Image 1 (cartoon, each protein chain N blue to C red):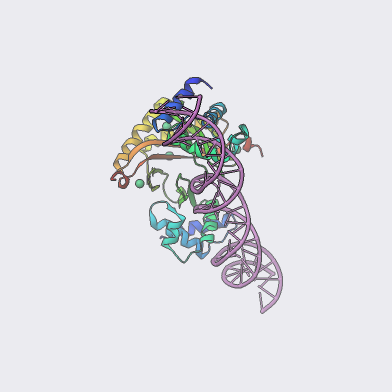
Image 2 (cartoon, helix red, strand yellow):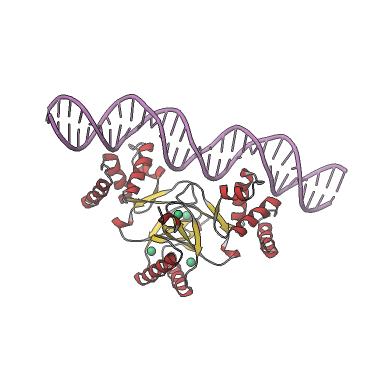
Length: 146
Length: 146
DNA sequence: GTTAGTTATGAGGATGATTCTCAACAATCT
DNA sequence: AGATTGTTGAGAATCATCCTCATAACTAAC
Ligand SMILES: [Zn+2]
Ligand SMILES: [Zn+2]
Ligand SMILES: [Zn+2]
Ligand SMILES: [Zn+2]
């Protein structure tokens, strides 16, 4: 967990007048160390010293600050990962069976073409576009063997 | 609400040994008449004769049958719309402020390029891809005036 | 068209993820 | 240090969603 990650997180929090406390630093560390989006029970497993209510509150704060992103799913729990601004722009593979999520990126040319097409379509509908979300929905390798 | 829509819905239900009852027909009618994805409170507003518990149960049945699709959101309620198989493949514009959702389609060339790129990327990750979801996240026209 | 068997309904209750409350605690400033 | 303001966490509250079960509707023989 590199220091500049924590520095950047602290900066973003300061921008919305929030402190970078121990609990929040721990959350960023857990998410950075995981490599894939985690549900809150998974976060608590990885650091049992954290209090459930604080984890909910702090992930919401970190989301507002733009440090983490919440991924909503059909399954029971939402999942969290570090915001794209701390990594590269990416998308998700979602398993309909077990709910697991992993990351992928598109070839630059496809991403580019997609982005300009989306920009145009949003403007035409009166929307001010901010970002986009793209998920491939399917069955993960593990769930195919059953 | 064209008859062939109801016929197709009935057929899909029959395939999973479910009946196309009055309540289910009413749900399909409401969703077909709306033109945009609706939350369950919105469905109940539009047809107050429906029972809340039956709406939840029947939308789940219709989802299993492939007649409706559930759209999960950051906001309080999920939303439902008729499945793509009853209309054309499309995507969503999502307002981060009020949660409203509207539909759009991509130019065929972009959609095509995207689809083949996704297929390739999913296979490489061991996934059996089923479909994809693409949302533009931003601010709707109404919410920009405030 | 009656009967027996199966499936759907709906009102109210249960579940459970998330959010709220509030008293104790920690950081920041003068 | 004292005063002010932000944070924590254990438990309670909320509320979208799902479940229960007695009743009603449908279906398929007889
Ligand atoms: Zn899986
Ligand atoms: Zn993208
Ligand atoms: Zn809006
Ligand atoms: Zn598409």
